[in-house]
Length: 284
Ligand SMILES: [Zn+2]
Image (cartoon, rainbow, N blue to C red):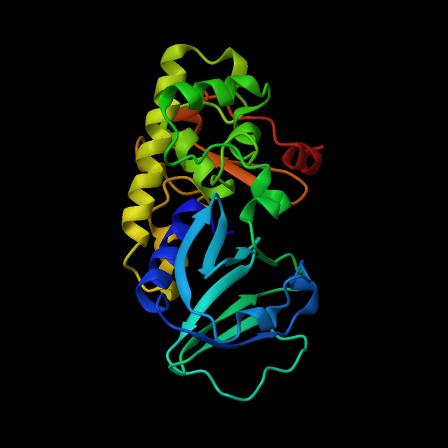
């Protein structure tokens, strides 16, 4: 799933390539992806793209007075194309959800792989009218240490869950939370309102370092290569069974119904493996 650094890089890429160009037409291939009906997509036709940014993990493409706000969900991505065919896109079952053709013949596709269709696009006058955007907490990349601590302690729960709660802090998902918690040498199951000041300071520093490093790695890369770039910078995420780059211990995982987390027992949990319900079921 694209998280803050990848969405930041996609926005930077769009600022470079498409800002200043006019939209010739917008085709919606996956009707369910467009969550708004007023204004209609045709309101974008002939309009100039004036900016690109993000709100947490939401991408914001500014077109005059309008915002095309996109949540890429788990398997969504944006592909810039130097040349896009003039033939209108046919609604269907392919990976393309939405296509934007520009006045210079270039454009971009929003795609979503797999059968779970969760990509969401909103065409709005005010980004705050997008429900997910209105509820976002402060941005994880720009929040100060005091606000950060107050937000984390203010939502009692396991650290992994709280750090990825977009209403607490915006931008961190499953992959970067694994990395941040490892860098801070904390347990993913640490209870947030019991973190010491020292642990909180380590968590804040790790969040800043991890996200800034990832943005620096991602921005300037071609959007198409971002996913690989994200993987290659990871210490524990999706590296179950491999050695921890800090201490050499084998990285372990905990599985949930539809996700998993990875951690290093030596760096993070005093050498003790965390309970994994799936593993205990298999061993029973
Ligand atoms: Zn380690």
